[in-house]
Length: 65
Image (cartoon, rainbow, N blue to C red; front, side, top):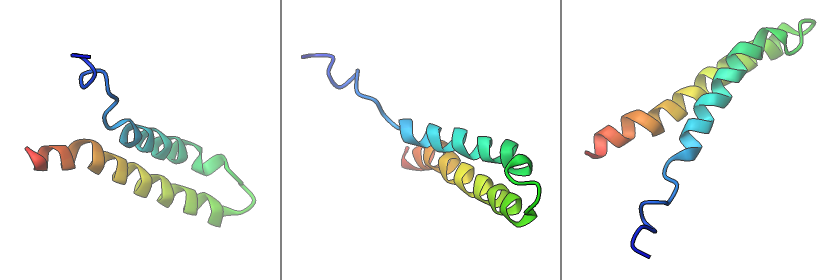
């Protein structure tokens, strides 16, 4: 088919990492209020995961061009 290359999904996992990192950032204080270490771990994990997704989605693609 002529349009087979056009219809392929490209880079969907990086956007999912950004969304997952943002969800962790919003939900981190509410995960377990009795154990603040888990909340801090989720906060740091959200920043790291979102940062990786941001790098894959925007920085790496601009560095290639």
